[in-house]
Structure formats: C-alpha cells, structure tokens
Image (cartoon, rainbow, N blue to C red; front, side, top):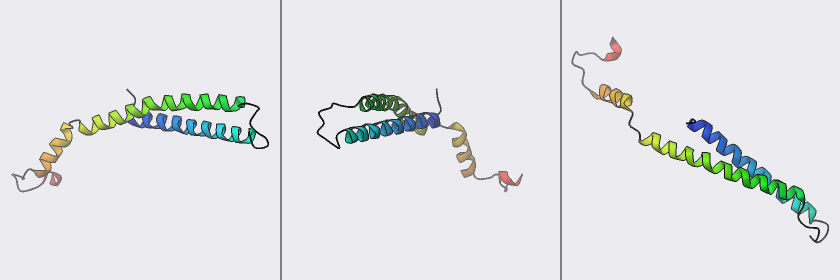
Amino acid sequence: MHSPRVLGVVALVAILVAAISFAVVDVSIADGCADATCNGGIPVVAITFAALGGLAALVSVIPAVTWIVEAIRNSRAAHPEVDRELARAHRPSRRGFEDDDL
C-alpha cells in the first residue's frame, strides 16, 4: 500500500497532465480554425492530446479516490499510543511531581 503522500502526488500530477493536454487541444483547434472555416477537420495533434488528457484524467481517479479513502480511514483509526499519552497527561500525579521532572 502506498503512502498518502505518494497517492496525492500521483493524482495531482495526472490531473496536471490532463489539464495541459486539454489546453494543447484547445490551442491546436483554435489555431486550425482561426484563418478560415473549420472544413479541414480536427488536427491530429488535437486528437492525440485529447486521448492523452482523457487517459491522464482516468489515471488520476484511482489514486485520488484511494488517497481520500486512506485519509478518512486514518482519521478514524484508533491510535493507542496517543490515547495513552493523553491519559497520562490528564492523570493526577501521585508523587507530587510530573513525569518531565525525572
């Protein structure tokens, strides 16, 4: 199982690749239709980057969902060491001094 940081980075990078790919599609279609009517068809660059952007968007879904699920699961999980530390901090001292004084 990957760490939440790795899953987050993978998801964000895939979303960034998708956004750049869709921007290239937009620019290539706009440049192809700027001078005349768009009777020439869709440029090959636009089709290639649209496929790359769609693939990157699909790839980003799995790590993003896993990242969210792990974050929720980790926030609800019991942490016995933290519970012991909290109990120790709130327990009155029997000897008249704190644990830090030792």
